[in-house]
Length: 447
Image (cartoon, rainbow, N blue to C red; front, side, top):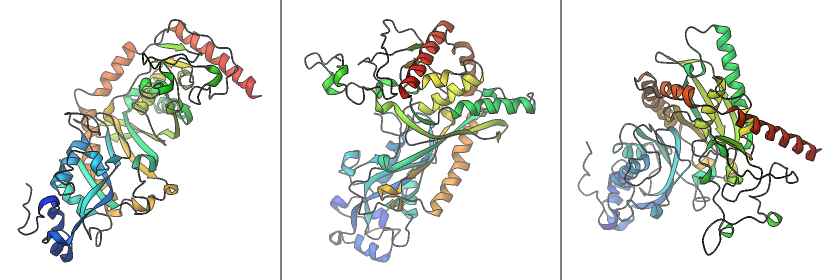
């Protein structure tokens, strides 16, 4: 139940609900809040560390009338007095930005939201981690969303600070029932070791910088540039190879190899050598994976599970889930063992399986010191303790609940893969021959 604002603390006019914050701060702030002319509040750019259980939400970002994390968070900050009436619902007015976005059903322990909040002048005097501010916002949030801390962004970088750009590393954990890779109570210790080794080898192939166009919604990241559109019809026109842009150049170093146009695109796997303005692989499709590993078997309630950890600079939509899905499919011998290597070549076009969203969690976010912002947005030790408690009490239990459910998404997914995850052998052979030929020509060019 929301507590009422004590008499004399609510600010008049534009100050709106700022008095709710004032109740928890120093006597100087309380005295200022009772006088609207004192300028007791100010708009200050902050970095807000949040965590959430993504079940039941259509992702983090606002999405029309659908339930989203940001919709609930925006409302809670407004009710707590951090956003004025005139700015509520208008993220542009408060400079709202996020360090990363998550898909529908994905959880998070390390999302940073930045915005300009209405705050008392001494908001962090005795509370540098912004725990009290977080508590005021949490009063208006459901238990599945928590604010761990609210810290000020340094004046030196407040105008240029963008959490998405300042975040240099993002680490995700995917919790996968061990049964998905063939591990159960009846499998011997030796067989378990072999299955884990094979699964880890497949995951290791993702490390490094590669084009991950086969692991996302490709059209979202390779839209033709304005100059590549016919100015009358707004339709793509053929690119001039003699003066192609950097996005159109062959970054694999094979610019001199012969090009063959595929007249009919075989599905679900084919090789495309000639640049196609309607299906371009650009710099946006390249991502750097720093680590991709799998730990030992863990117990999630009564279920044996594996924790797959993926760390990278940034990720595209569905990328991690498709990486997990493909590695699982290879381990289950549904896809050939060299499919990952072929899929990470810019000329390949392959339809790959996607793992369920229920096991994916954003575990940590690292902010690089070269942006001169890491000191300004560190989460306090108390905030870290609250984040760990939120993981144990909410995110972990939600994943366990999904694994125990009669509608276990992984069981249905594995059944669907066993039935439908299949690449016709002629397509795979043709793709492999083109890939091997490309590797041979590339190596010859590099010598």
